[in-house]
Length: 571
Image 1 (cartoon, rainbow, N blue to C red):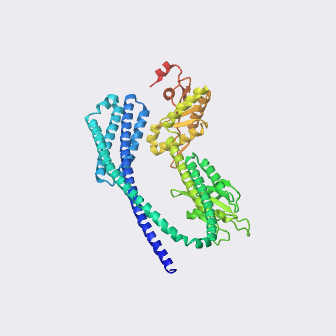
Image 2 (tube, rainbow, N blue to C red):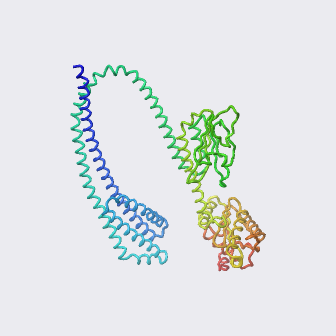
Image 3 (tube, helix red, strand yellow):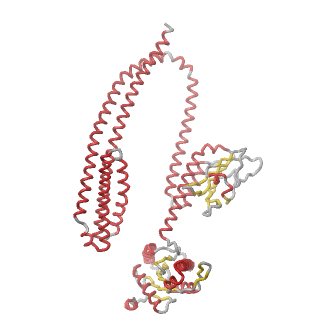
């Protein structure tokens, strides 16, 4: 009998295990089928919602177009372009969603072509409106437009109908799967109870063995508590890292991102000193931009890139105490007995070296958090790269590349803004229109390259002779504009004379030769004496410039206050 009991226990456990496996496999398969059906239902609903969203965007675009045609309000035109710009991405997403259904994929492709045809018609209508006004735009809306709109609606209804038919089929399948899963669960309850009874009986004999294992259990529980503490710390670190990354994405300047990174690393590694270096634009030196904590191994404020192994290899470099590898040249050892640990983490984004994170400590315990350090450094690299790109794009959007001056669009925006500000403060504003005399003749004689050299040199001169608050712009061709906020008439005229005299003495070198001297004619208009609107001031200054040209060039003329005089000298 004693021999049979262990054998019976083994048989009972095997039977119980087999029953559990069968029930478990059935439940898993049923659950997988139910999940698959639910995913397909969700997929169908997503397709239907996306079709509706595309139709809504198209209607929004048509409404914005009609609003623009009726009111000429550029806000409607901006709404139209925004709606139009979002449609291609949405159509591509819809094609991606239905790629597993050849029939729907063909219908979506046909619908996409019809939408592109409709967008082309709308663009053509806007073009007709721009050239011929509202009547021309109305004539362009004919039967072809109505046929296209009708076809779009019919195709959308067909797509939705097909998806709804699939939705019905998939919903039925999902219900069947749920029924099967429920049946398996109900079947498993009594079997599970029976198995529990069997297992309970078998486990009674194991009580004594479990009693002997209590000590081991206590030890395991202690280890578990330690693991829980470690997981909690890890969770807190990840939350802090996530918060840091989110705030980095909201930074508006490199300085702000560097300050945020300094705070994060000082909290993450309180026992380590850190320095953040930025690689200079010349890509030859790394320069310190931030420092925190106390270094165990100090570094210079600036060093060549080849002095750091991390910057050479493009990956983190760890140097531990008593390490056999050569240290970085920029890491200065305080004494022969000192054996600190340091880490160099390169800041790289889009294949470009942006900087270096340098950390050092007498205790290498901080190396246990290197995964967080690397991730935070990568996030900082991406943020710095994004901010630098935004800065370059911002400059390119408002600067004219040849002269380095602001472009005409920025002129119009700034003039309206400065006029409003001066009006609120009851301050004057000066406006100059400058034109290089005989520039076309100069261009014909010395070529476009010589003309470009002249324009570039004049741009530098205009910036040098302008105040910090002045706004120098290239108006077009050889014409330039200078806005002088809060400057009275005497100051503006004196500044204009200084610019005119500066152009007389300006030296322009091209291909190793000095080009002939040129002169400039300047027209001046003042706010509020000559007008309260930007267009009015530009027109008055242009008239004054025309008068300076006809009076012999190389001179400064102020706009006439009398409107009749202005009209008399206007070209």
